[in-house]
Structures are given as C-alpha cells and as structure tokens.
Image: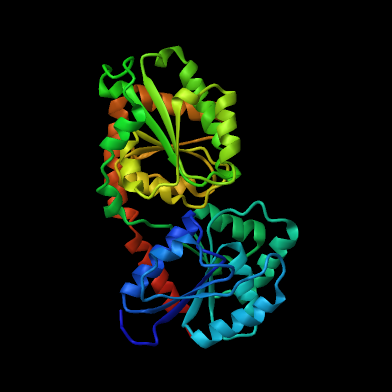
Length: 384
C-alpha cells in the first residue's frame, strides 16, 4: 500500500459507544492508519468512550448532532467531508448511513455504506429511504449473508451493489487470554463443589450490551431448565453476564423471579475480555437479532466452544469445516438452547473438540486482516 497522501479515507458513525459495530470500526480505522493512510473519523453526535482507543494519527471530528431531525447537520457534514476530500466515505449503522448519503447526494465523493444487521425493526418509511439512498451508494457492505439477503430482497437494493464482508477480530489477542483466576473466582470455593473434578464444574458465559435484542431472559430460562434437570444434578453450573446496558435492571429482576441468584454472576463492563472468554467453558448468545457477532468470533479464537441462537448473521460466526464445528446454532427458544447446552455440559470431550477446532479455524479465517484487506480493496475500486 502506498503512503501517498492521496490515500485519504473518511469514516462516519453516530458515536463510538461500546458495541460490536463500533469496536469493529475502531479496529479497522487503526489498521488502515497503520498502513499509511490518512484516516478521518467523523462522529455525528459525540465521540463516545471507544474514541480513546483510536490510533493517535486518526483525526476525529465531532459534529454535535441534535436529538431528532437536525437539518443543519446536512450542511455541516457536507462541508466536513468536502474539506477532507477522501477517496470515499465509509458510513456505519443506520443514522450515519442515512445522513452521510443524504449530505453527499449531489457530491462526487463515493459512499460505501456498511449495514451491520438485518434491520427488521425499520418501519416502511425508513425502508423506502434506504431504497432511495441506495441510488447514491457506490457500494453497500453487509456483514453477513443474512444481512445481504435482507437488503436485496426486502429493501430492494440492487444486488450488484452489495458486498458481503464478514467482521474480523484480532485473533492473536484472544488466543493469548488467561482465564484461570477468573474461573476460580466465578465458580467460587463452595465446599459442596470444590471436590468435584474439573469437568463437573462448568462455567457458561455471555458478553455484550444488555439490550432487548440480546434476549437475556431466554438465556436465564434455559439455565432454569438445566438447574432443574435431574441428569445435571452432579454438575456445578454458573452463568456469567459480562456487560451493562438499559436492560440490566430488568435482567437482574428476572433472575430473582426465577430464584437463580446463586447460579448467576453479573460483572458489569470489563476490559479483560480475552481472559474472560478463555475462562468460560461455553460462550452463549441467546439473541433475537445479530449482524455478525464479534464476541462469538472472539470466543472461538480464545479456545472456547459456542452455542448461538439462529439470529440473523450468527450462522456466519461459527467455525465449520466438513463434520467439524466450533459450536452449535440452535433455534430461538429456551428449550432448544437448554438442550444444546446440556449436551456440551455433559460431554467435556465434545466441548474440547469444538474448542480446539474453533480456535484453529478462527486463527486462519476470522482475523481482522482479512476484513481490512477486503474493505481497502473495495474503497480503492469505488474511488474517484
């Protein structure tokens, strides 16, 4: 890659809050800056907490978008991006995808819009706007085949504009986590269980924002089934929730309603996720909606098997090759999730086979360098 100053790229996003899409964008921006590009990151509302993780060479601009309609933002965003004069702009998530394409509607600057999930929540007028703005889109990146199908078949975007680029993670960072201390802390020193062999002390866990789309109540219900299952009475089970968000209070109340306080640990937000994921025996997502979940990729890179509900792009986030898999995809029900978890709880050899294969596959296929290379190639192909 040339270090020529002409290699200037601009990214737009509403704000860099803690979330999978935001983490992915920060990682990509840092890597492209390290390749010698001049990288600008434009936050429409505010910078957000993840801005502190950006490479110091990245220029951050905040446009202070007002809540709700902010017609003045169109002029501010147009001027900002025109002054930057990048080879193209890559926008992320609904707000930035909408405002960026609208602001550059009569500009010659190409826009690559990245959609991170099957946005079934969008009302008809939003879908119509997405369709209209697709005519001002140089390319639309979908992070999974499921997301691509939604935008082509439901929104009506021309399939020739759509490129599927799966998310990637820094696999080496997650492969080098050490979770022994956390595992001991979370499983505890209950005299009733400390004399059990390691394979009978099982730590389940999930990482992510506590929002309705994650359906944490489904995971709690599945744990309830496991706790009440006679075939699992010899197993010590613990479930760890890592993360925070607007549903935290509701999730905590539901745990109490199910009388599962002794089986669940809430940690809040943590920044030692490689160690966290390595500590788990099984990583679980009980979501209703996912784009291409980074945490599932990270868990497999950490050497942890996964069980995911079939929620949008989750199918693209499990390592598969022939009869080998890094985990299991199940229907979106507490009964199906409990059945899949029971199988791996009772079979430590199955857990280990999945973990070993999943880690090998993740290191070879899920690394962010593949994602970044595909984005850079796309940016150059649409550039003026």
